[in-house]
Image 1 (tube, rainbow, N blue to C red):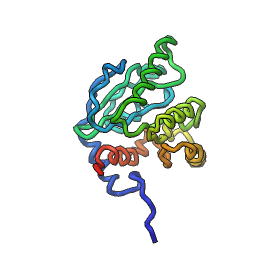
Image 2 (image 1 turned 180 degrees about the vertical axis):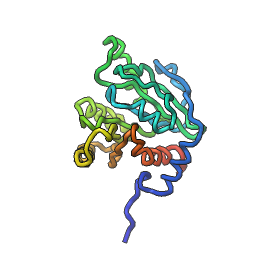
Image 3 (image 1 turned 60 degrees about the vertical axis):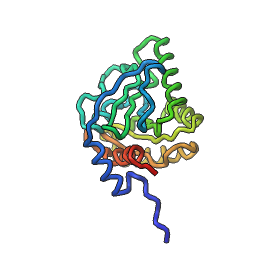
Length: 219
């Protein structure tokens, strides 16, 4: 009998590697507001994107065990640049501006969106995009528009449900199944949806393992 294929988040080896990776020094590299100011393409990158106020900065802080590595704000649209964070010499995390509602001039929002598109379309070191979805609200039209864009660019992406401590277990299980069913239509989509809570530190180990596989796998 052929053994079932393990995703990194199910594989003890990559779970161990993920734990190790996120004990390494993690620090802010730079914020980029234009394509010209992006850092050189060196290490493998994973990017985080989601609707404004989805809990992206809180997840990055929980993931890296830093209270204020990524700026947390209760005002949607405060992340106005692409923020790059190095994981020692092993990989780079990228925090993208939120999409959807933002308290900013329309011209600035258009500029952010263009920067995100340019980054996604032209970054050779970008290995995966994590699309964050608020588990209280499920998939919105704007999320599916991001899926369409990533599908068009043939970029590997994986959905992460956030704020899972705020929904009941049965509702979360139903949402995971519904989301996994919807992303089957997208060739670059990772088939497994991750569920996380920054408050309760749940689901971080699975995400560590996925990122470790991307950053450390040389094959």
